[in-house]
Length: 118
Image 1 (cartoon, rainbow, N blue to C red):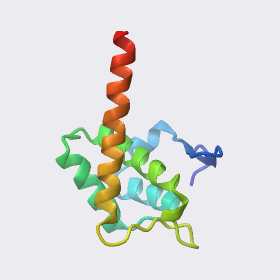
Image 2 (image 1 turned 45 degrees about the horizontal axis):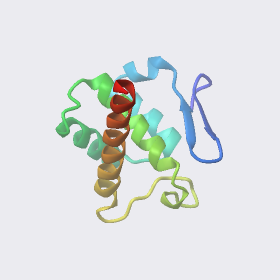
Image 3 (image 1 turned 45 degrees about the vertical axis):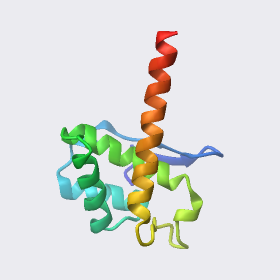
């Protein structure tokens, strides 16, 4: 993790502060940055990236923000980390968590829209 980035536990979830330049890194460097924060391997990263792409997040900047939001969401669930603090999902667990995250995001977006219209 670089000095301009931070990851802290607020008691209920991890809060990540990202240097905006990270979003613009070359793919291999962005992956290394994610790996240093979350302990994911390239296969997990590629699966997450592809899942968001296939969910109509075509813009790379938007997709990378979603990747970081998803990994932060997962990091909040302590049960997903092993003793080395790497994220682990188990068979079928990654897709299940992606769907859970997507549903949560969709729900929060609908709630924001509803509150804005009230």
